[in-house]
Length: 418
Image 1 (cartoon, helix red, strand yellow):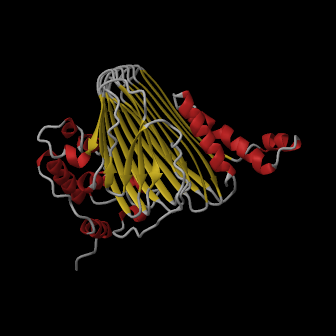
Image 2 (cartoon, rainbow, N blue to C red):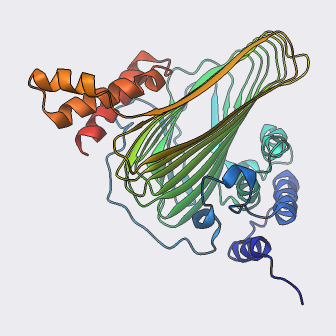
Image 3 (cartoon, rainbow, N blue to C red):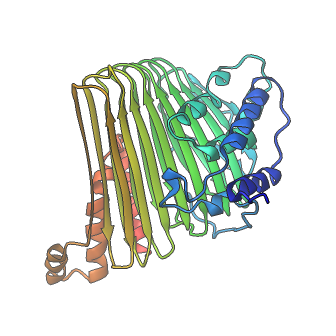
């Protein structure tokens, strides 16, 4: 008698619910390759090592349902940027592009026999799935309905803003190339509908810089899984910050390779939520060059039974001397019903390194709260002030002063709304 395999059954049902885009050339080949890999690996289940703290069922099931949240003002509306609208699988590009910036739809890029995205699409995702299988990213590479392809060849002053509006099952794949000596700021925001699976692959050439700033929320009914795969050459800078509020389940994965000497990488997040809020950050940073720096700064504020997860790994390969790796994950629990689950990891094969990690969980500082209340500050306002102070270390990782202040104001406004 054959025993049913729940993981295989779930994978088969999910794949049967999707339609593979019919494309030829390099994009079609990349999709077929990813499809073969996801069939061989299977979609994630609770027994998988890196899914022990997060139930992937909502991300794997064939039917996500349909959820339309209350329309929200976009948090980046006040920022002067190059705006790209993504409504479900419809990508609308602007023609007003500064010199040194190229943007096109993924589907259009795939029609070219030779295109720079060919060397990135699915390539970085496959590299990132080497140490730890990432089947939801493989699924995305195979079935992404569309996405945005961005190339910076100079120092772009205006940020590029990808604004997403989704209603059902959203699968998008973005490709970013920052050429040698170029720089770009990429903003992301919007609503995801019932479910979203988004992959962004980033390749940064020697001396280039990318600043990645993302705001998720405050719509509550979403189920989101994102992957950011980054490859950094020598003398490069990658800085990523996420502000996340509410959402029934959010899992953000970052897979970063420092392949050139003197590269710098920073990944940070400030998250807060309540009730059935479940927020998972999973980060894998590989040092494969000399004198590189990486920082991971993650802060979560949880109440009314919310759950926070952090899984962060720093891998230092043999020969990656002078590595400086820093990792901190902290949670502020505003009641006894919430929980924070952390799994920090270091794996080091070089002997001249400075690597550290720390993870703490605690309640609000009653002495500080009493001090504020004794000076006439209402309890709710005093609590919000202490929460803002706790999250400030993560927000400070945003390099641009104007964007940092803007995110801080957005955070304070969301907190005041409960």
